[in-house]
Image (cartoon, rainbow, N blue to C red; front, side, top):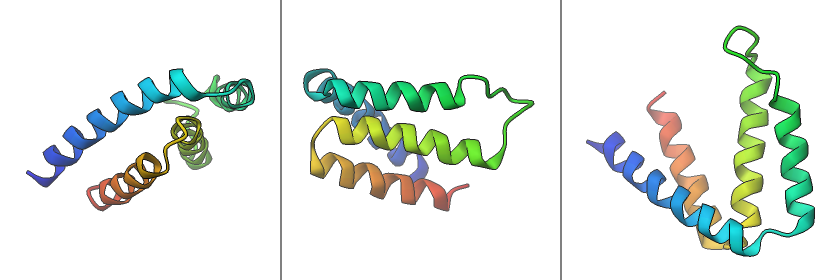
Length: 87
């Protein structure tokens, strides 16, 4: 049941992040995120490496930071830490 609660929380955090990102992200944020996307654009299931996981985390963190809400980032980080316990 804990994992279901975490997924519910993550779903809500993603919705809020997207809404705030659209409202608050700067041009510099968009350029940075585009660069992060380009770093992982060619990754497939067959070519995936552990370093690609770190790149994906950097992308997610950049999006949450661009939402410009410190509490949202804190909750995102806490939920990510809890998800790691289930892996």
